[in-house]
Image (cartoon, rainbow, N blue to C red; front, side, top):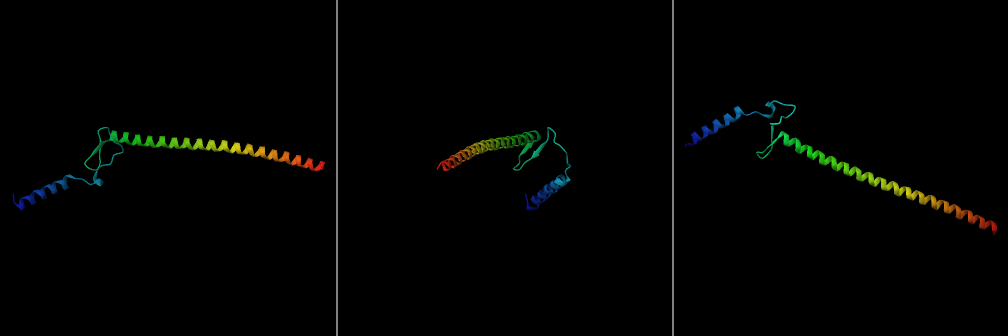
Length: 113
């Protein structure tokens, strides 16, 4: 086979590809996928619309569960902090009352002297 014949074959294949191919802008847009649709991925792979939906749903559910768990953790920590704050407040009241009693006793001792 001569170089000229090879070039003719190459040109014919390229012409056929250009004629039968479409750019993304030339494709018709749809609002949703049907069960038998496939989406092209990189590296010569494809995924069915159904499997893509399952994959996306699974990932969204995982993230939602993680967010809920983090929320619950924050709520628990907040409750613990509130309890600690309440305990500190009670101790502060006790110390204040004790200080008042001590002041009264000290005042009474001064009156007696």
